[in-house]
Image (tube, rainbow, N blue to C red; front, side):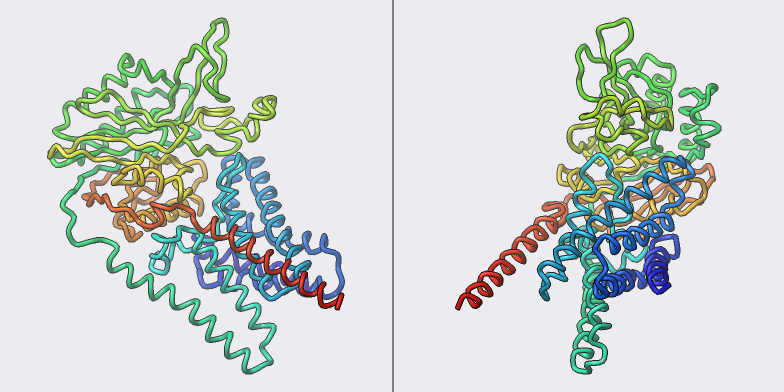
Length: 535
């Protein structure tokens, strides 16, 4: 019974502290303490390590279900797979640390949980089953005033902060009866908690320089089209969807407008990129851009390219021909002078847009989940890309097109900024999940991208939440859920680069060095112990 209570306490604290499943953020600083207590109890009682792994798995499974249950709204099987596999991966990371700590059994080995977990989060963003939604640093997306220093560390800095405090609180519990040590740990914990927050408050004052000579006026559109009943039905047409976003945009476009932003797959029915201008909806959109005094259009679309060779894993042979085609989830920039510019989504949703490991096991493509008009593996860009346009003052503006899932990958976005992006534009369709915490969490994560790179974020969702976020992560405008609307926003463009923009997830490299250092100290300790025994 005590084991079950500790499992429930740990998972409950982690759920209640997560954004929009409680948002009681301080709970995360003690959320792992019950699990550490459970570990101490099980190992102290002589239990096998595999029993600890089972209890740990149950804790992480409940945590995953409690925070991301809404995934099942889009796909029940996909949700179950996400919960079970992600919990298993977390258990493996925690179990690896527990095994190493048990073998080394030194004071510093206990703290190896921090680098091992950071490397787990780092690796989890870089393989076919990537699902970094529960990266610990994401917890502060609703408390951006606490983590302005993400411009140096990214979200992994928040992960390390959470783990460090949990370990210190656990140590405090262990030495609580020893007054001197207890007081030492209490002061240390207070310092570790308060110093980052104080530094963050100071940084927030300097997040937006007073002088911003380069401005951009934008209109953000939220068409509010039901993805289940309207967007991907037999009667759907790109012409109708193009007309609807033009009508919404025209309510706000003025001679000052530089950019109109629309959601992911605004044009949901696939078309060949090279023939865009041959379609009626393509001509209508191009004509509308020409009619606008100065505005450019960034729009989401499902697109196709034809090849006379197998271009990549995503290439599919055309029956009866010697050609291949690739499907993409794309962003499309239309300007007055330049030809249409396409950028394809790079970070694909496992199962929906990407068949995991099909590069090694091609037969898995047949098992792809269909969703949103796409099945199998979509084509991707080989590296993050940016787009360029001209404003009314003949100024060149570079922007980062970020499609849906890509917005939860900090280093991916930072690479776009490193290439010169002055503005982050997120195009997404969060309507798959219904009115759940899912779309709210997704919006809040965008605030972290603003802080990491000190860039304005403009976010256009098919339905709530669309909005604008300043470089300090503050929400300036935010649309309600399930409302057809549009709004205008004036922003300041920046060209400076933060430490995180320049160096990305450098904490992962530090974590590797930390682990190697700990092992070297341990081996040196064993060597000394062996020599002493021989003497």
